[in-house]
Length: 277
Image (cartoon, rainbow, N blue to C red; front, top):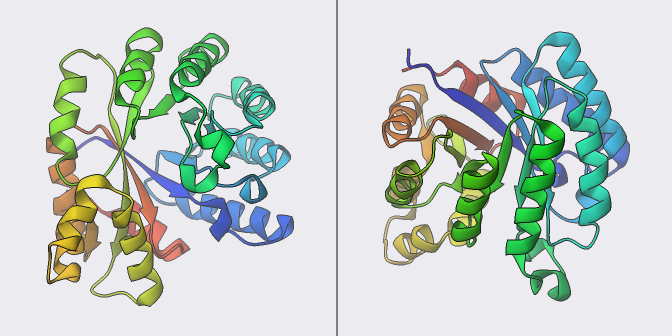
């Protein structure tokens, strides 16, 4: 078995509508990650209304400490208008724990207002990286690279952040440029589904992700076989097939693979964590 790190990504909007159901979903998936071979539990950021509460994050971090579980990694989008307050509150939670880290991203325009999407990401990301490193010491700090590759590189060089790529066709060639100048791990976010077939909801999740990636969307547009294209580009297939793809990703230079279960269920988390190669 190859020694590398894997994580699970959780989208808050899929955890439930009410704050109570969202909390229950969060702890349910964390429990699944705990009994699997999962190292990191990354909580995506979406709209403000989708956010996991700071109190729930704090409780989850305490649990992670008590059970020596996966490192809890909440995501903060720096272009969102609530960034200063959200960043302060989350760093306060993360700073006091040995089982927590942080992910900083520019913020997907899909989840931002027109004014927020128009804000310059570069100075905000650099500020967030500096504050994160000064407050969090050697804890894991991921920085999203999508559409901000240059400033993400600066964050990594100056503040030892870990570049966090999104799986796309040919992403391994971009990683080479980072590895040539950085002495930090490299992470990738990758949608997955372990199984021999999936339903409409999973297909829609995969296609939606692919449509937002530059090269992946082009491949799909030019393909007469979208299923075949998805199977080639993403972590889709039985345990052996997905295991071989994980091995390829590792050989391409990624140290951390954060899988997003397109079928957001405990079973998918178990299956992903159990794959060896």
